[in-house]
Length: 182
Image (cartoon, rainbow, N blue to C red; front, side):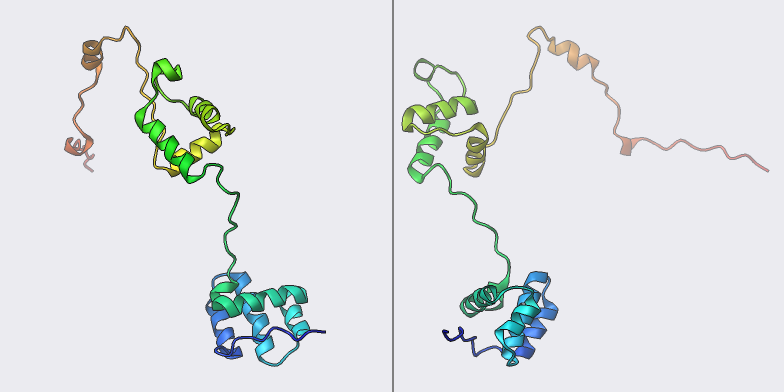
């Protein structure tokens, strides 16, 4: 049987319990209290019982605690899947969006997500969904813009004449209330 991984010497049980009291993360609190058991001289099995986990998990907590201190016992955000686009493809996509499509070459007068996905396939032979492409463009600082639709026979002067020109609510005078005299 191998020796257990030793804990850092710059912490002690009372300090870990104090940190556990001040923690807002219940998982970190449970881990700190389990490690405080080890500092008190209890066995790793007792610490695992306190934390409600197995011995291997306690060992993982000790390794994380030794490396990063109490912050190492916080739950981290999962990294998620890697991006489909690497930096060179992202730069090429940015350049294509900023330059805009050439109708004679690309066959479109404005870029839509589906057109950009087709362009990426033709350029790099990579398939990407519209949702993923939209997320990538948002992360690059681009936003989806759409023009407000207008009827081709709309009369601008008639629309302007139809608009109400009411004074703003804060400039209106309150109406006087008539109180019944008794």
